[in-house]
Image (cartoon, rainbow, N blue to C red):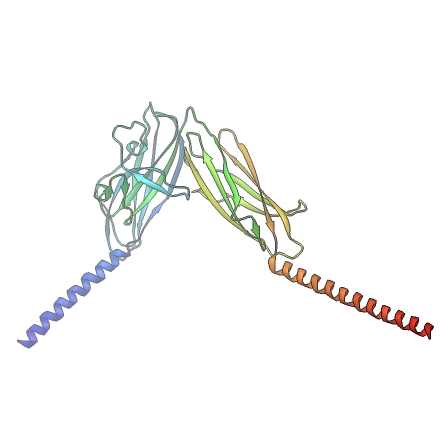
Length: 324
């Protein structure tokens, strides 16, 4: 009896252990989607076809599901949020993307291609339209929650679609500043906000040039040179943060200048610029120099007073000697 009880306990423990291992494995679910971004220009009434590749890098088979969501900017840090289809919105890119709703089986270590079609209506509004195809282990309607979607077990491929027609490319530098006004060394934080007031996404590119107090260029920061995800969506602002460092010396101090030069637009490149000023005041070297200077002044004063005192004493002795 005791042996049978021990066997039962062992089997139950083993099953619990296997279940825990399986749950842990799925907690570390890994999916790869390529490409992660589609950017295209297309006209009303046109059709565009392509496919996504989903790679299962897990040590077990997976069944995944694909679905569409609209996409919009969320904050200034480049984040976005997925929004479910709006049935009454004719300008709804997610509704124009056709992809299978059926389960998709992917063996472990293998990949599958998922074809899709983008079918633009003839009356589609010109400008930017944004959506995403999401692939995960559950059907999309099980993850929807109001206007947001839980994507912890999903991967996505974004669609930035530019529909030809009356496209307006308009933007400006909303803010360009340093993290603070005074720095002790050349370790500077720059904050740049670009505002898109047009109807299509823009990708601001350019540079920040840094000049010392003599007007000599001493550094440069490239903006959005190799970043496919550096777009700013219509009617939104995006914040870019940069850090620039350089070995500084006591001679590199004073009032410095940084100029942000940005260009944007595909139909016609437009340029905007903004300048900011900041100070380099190396506190420790300056304090050391001031203390050294004060010490030298005090020594000089002491030596002068000593010399004057000795001179007066010598003159007094000579006067006394003459009187005698």
